Image 1 (tube, chains in turn orange, brown):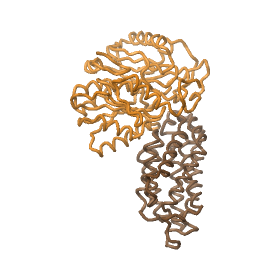
Image 2 (cartoon, helix red, strand yellow):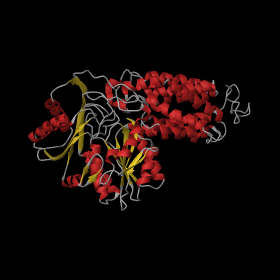
Image 3 (spheres, one colour):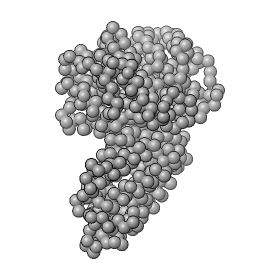
Image 4 (cartoon, chains in turn cyan, blue):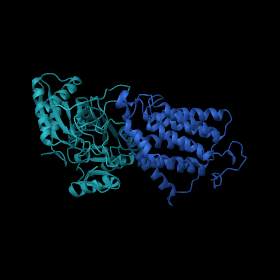
Length: 331
Length: 233
């Protein structure tokens, strides 16, 4: 393992210290592992709190700022935050209008956020939760823990964050978050496995010429292994897979996210995006807005995910609203 | 080590409240159990992580180790009041696990110990009262995680262990014999998870590929009951 770390045990603290040094617009509570905006919103508003395991940067701390999250709770690498963190964050950012928790559908995240929500409710903080479960690699059946939450998290946080910034009540902010999630589907392909610092070795073995199709953001196995093929063919397979589980038809508009998993250069992500755009054009689906880059990563895993969110005028307007965070900004 | 030597020990011979040969669950014994479990987690950290690497995300051992390191720190802290009763020791253990572990194992084990602690009477618990606490722990796990028998989770070790404990107590067994029966049933349940297909947690994403691997959560639960048998036997 070659990593730019001090010790495997201090990865999170050391990274949070760096976030604090780099971003004076954020307030970083290193001991409690909570990142909030340094300047609180002037008027009472619904507060958005998200979090999850570390190793998915810029998710979630990189999306704290006006127009998006009010607080983020980074857990240990690939391990959900603990309820105390979420409660600390909720207390810090609740202005009386309530708190929306954005949670990815992973067993640990669901349980820890649920305990936190109960604790916050006991303290009189009004809490709602939006569960993100967009990954079509996993069947949403009673035989699994349900579909995983991945790339759509960015869209849920951005769009719900924009509505919260406008002063909408908690029920409406939660509803738009659920709407974005329901309109989103994602699918990922890994070219290499990630190495968790504490483990010191790749999370799974993948031969040089093979890829994991349908991989999860912690390196959970996907649907199958197969030989690496040109980007055009991989993009076609990913688009087909996403569309097979989506109700998109000719004439629909989408927000398209081609997301790097951490170890793939932008050059390659743009190659993929070009292919995706051509394939969607063939089907009459319009890419109304696009996003290309590393947003929901898996440490140093190479590969990409595609997220397509069916968008109407209302969602697009919220998508276009100003945002000022380390990883996403638009004036 | 004589676990009945502590200040909270019951009077030997009190009916159902323990004897030197068959102790009741009092605060010193509860603390001895937690310390033994922490030592077992330390000794088996690599094994738990390797089992989890095969079908999960490879952090079960390190997460539980982090949690029980924090539990020991709480037990050893001069700021922690001396153990008044077993329920307080178990409840404190549960709260510490919830606040330090994260992932799925933190809330599941944390809630189990909190529920056990809340269900115990303030005095040393009889075997029947402890059986009730163990049942409350399982109920908390099942309510939070939603898993049932056969889902390839810690429930597959915990549920048979509880049943064996209850059956032994109903048959007149004391704490030591009931705990030994529970430990054996937990280990059998643990081994029986190998051929199952996971339906909960990250292992469920493997589908049929999870078959053939022993469940890491059932394995740590077997440690929980084995250490209980060790400190009571």
